[in-house]
Length: 336
Image (cartoon, rainbow, N blue to C red; front, top):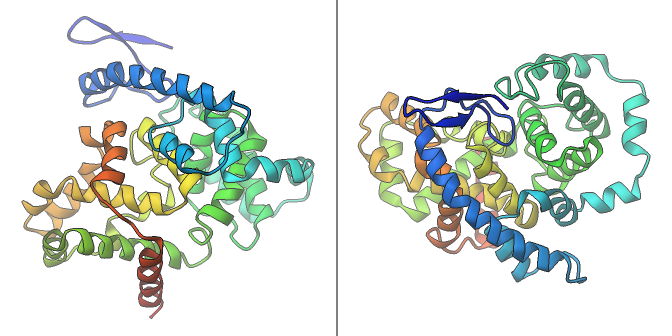
């Protein structure tokens, strides 16, 4: 890793632990201050996860595991825990030759060409994706295999960022392939279907959640003419990858693999609600859109520990039955 001297004459790494360039970070001091405190949190969580994983009881979806996931999975355990909670581990064991066969079988040329166009756009600021010698080939393998294994969905932009970040964390093509398969079939089964109706409906659903949790903020956003489709398209399509700071995205995914897509809705709503004061100060379409684009970059988004805590504590109850009724109503609306 390279290093540079900052204006305060202290040495800082040019890239973070995942290979992302930090040389243009607008808030390096905020990042360093947060990480210094967060590392001690990670150390405490690591010891508790180690006890859980060595207990011999395995990983099952229960209240204890939910609590542990919400507080964060240490990076050294993410691969194994994600694979078990998502069902990817079981799928891989049941289909031991599937991934290798997908790589050697005949491919749809148009799909391969579309994916190739997206490879150089995937995390170009990351040292592992900035050259052809890095992870681009692995990324291509995963995306091509996934699109041929799920021909009803094919390939959609956004999947490249999800697969790319998974490769940086999991470091194994086949495991990433099965995690992606679980995502698009089980966790968020309709986001990547042709027509994108489910993603459009989820954006409308985000608006309904804001209306439910804070009517005054909802009315103000509506009053300046901002449509919800302008708010969360990339948030949902990328599952916040290439949107929020890396550590924050991984904390979101810790919960996503255990609890499902409702977590994405909680995070999106919290990003809007915790910036209420700034959003209420916007009195035009342009200023509102600019502010919404800015809120993902402020220190609140960086502090993943506080953000995730607020998602579950401050937002309160998110009854699945109510959310599903609202979602179905939104699906009807976008289909009209």
